[in-house]
Length: 465
Ligand SMILES: *[C@@H]1O[C@H](CO)[C@@H](O)[C@H](O)[C@H]1NC(C)=O
Ligand SMILES: *[C@@H]1O[C@H](CO)[C@@H](O)[C@H](O)[C@H]1NC(C)=O
Ligand SMILES: *[C@@H]1O[C@H](CO)[C@@H](O)[C@H](O)[C@H]1NC(C)=O
Ligand SMILES: *[C@@H]1O[C@H](CO)[C@@H](O)[C@H](O)[C@H]1NC(C)=O
Ligand SMILES: *[C@@H]1O[C@H](CO)[C@@H](O)[C@H](O)[C@H]1NC(C)=O
Ligand SMILES: *[C@@H]1O[C@H](CO)[C@@H](O)[C@H](O)[C@H]1NC(C)=O
Ligand SMILES: *[C@@H]1O[C@H](CO)[C@@H](O)[C@H](O)[C@H]1NC(C)=O
Ligand SMILES: *[C@@H]1O[C@H](CO)[C@@H](O)[C@H](O)[C@H]1NC(C)=O
Image (cartoon, rainbow, N blue to C red; front, side, top):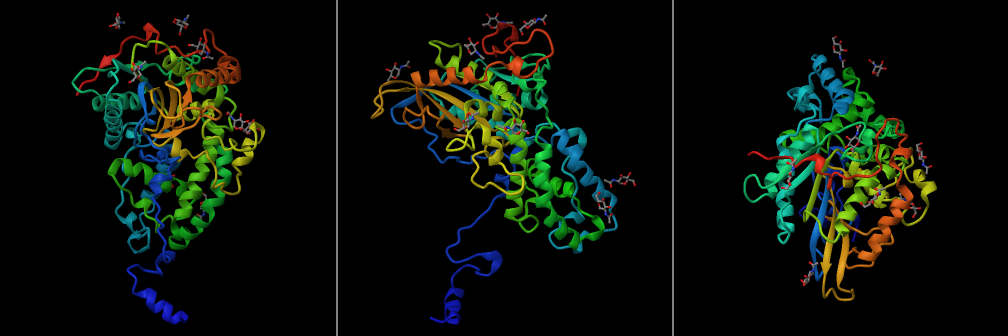
């Protein structure tokens, strides 16, 4: 068959062969909302695509969840650094007739989806995300008692997330209290925001490394947009802010023209995502030594409650900010780029600043979207073929079960009680010492988290409608 004949045959197939590189058999599709790091609306990335249902013969008998708060309008830093200046520049440049400019014509009548005053607040979409998680846990654990309380750090966005979650979980009004844990800078490890009381942690860590790759990937995008609208003089920060707006506008308005793949291509999004992953690697990930001692106390306290003979609650649920869940994952040894080779010493080599490591395990979009959650389940397994009856422990990250490295001797990525006990002890032996490793310079610090059993934190307050 000649090339011409082949083209004729193919031309009758019901899809466009020429449009944007589509080829025969291509099932390519791309959703930027799943590559937005810390501004991704909640989704379940199925990383890995393991079964969220308990393994055969196993029933959850006690569980703990650590949740990031749900979607907010924008965080202060993102607003001040990127989004605010872009919006102001847009307002200043009234002479540009955007309506005639391809892929940017929506800017002719686009307005910012929020003001600076709203920046840190939960959006309606955020309330829905948190309520949905409450309903999900209600369905997932019908055999467990509802908790008498859930814990949250004291910021409005975490508190309101906890309230919305409770409304989805409870079956009648006023069944579950919300307990607020003050975000003290002097609480040692004993809060849901221990990084705030760790002087060795800096919220700007990772910015320098991230901006190396940011400068690289935004350069051709700037050139392309500046060819379309030279008067605007798009900068690297403008591009970055526009890409953040895809996430933030979506969680405010339900959709955003900044997500259009004609404006930023799939490869542009993958590059943006990677620059964020570099930042989180050095900020709250394996590239920051303090992630280990700061993430450990929650893991240790929670593991011990789950292993205890009896406990006050069947469900321990807590809300915090984006920093803590990834640090806990590091303390647990999950999403470690070096897990199957390399070593602790070469971890930074896995996140080069000049090119994307597409095979990395560390993907912020997978571990810290809005409403991201880490669960540890205690499973009661009987008649689980090939395994002894008894207690097993399983970790879920956004519903995907994860095997703790070297602790996978149970069904469905779970770990036996003896294995889990040893795993926790080993992590404590390696990473304990919050106060010393954080260089704590205030009095009355502690290396241990006790909020779940400390009566002095109180019983919290009921959740109104
Ligand atoms: C917008 O214009 C005002 C007034 O000329 C100026 O002070 C401000 O720096 C401009 N902002 C941006 C982001 O260009
Ligand atoms: C474009 O913006 C950059 C960064 O703010 C600035 O250095 C440069 O002078 C601007 N160019 C023009 C033509 O305004
Ligand atoms: C990451 O994996 C490497 C290689 O297995 C290991 O040496 C290192 O301890 C791991 N890091 C953490 C924090 O678990
Ligand atoms: C990775 O880089 C960070 C930041 O420079 C540094 O503090 C850390 O010690 C490095 N990690 C290793 C294992 O070299
Ligand atoms: C575990 O499950 C078995 C079978 O359903 C049940 O008999 C046993 O009481 C359970 N044990 C605990 C500690 O819940
Ligand atoms: C020291 O910390 C404990 C536990 O957090 C607290 O109960 C106590 O009031 C603190 N004491 C002082 C003097 O701050
Ligand atoms: C770990 O938890 C146990 C049991 O609650 C506690 O005795 C120990 O001090 C904790 N260690 C750390 C470093 O959190
Ligand atoms: C919290 O609730 C428990 C159990 O109902 C009760 O014994 C205790 O007094 C309450 N604490 C406060 C501070 O109200």
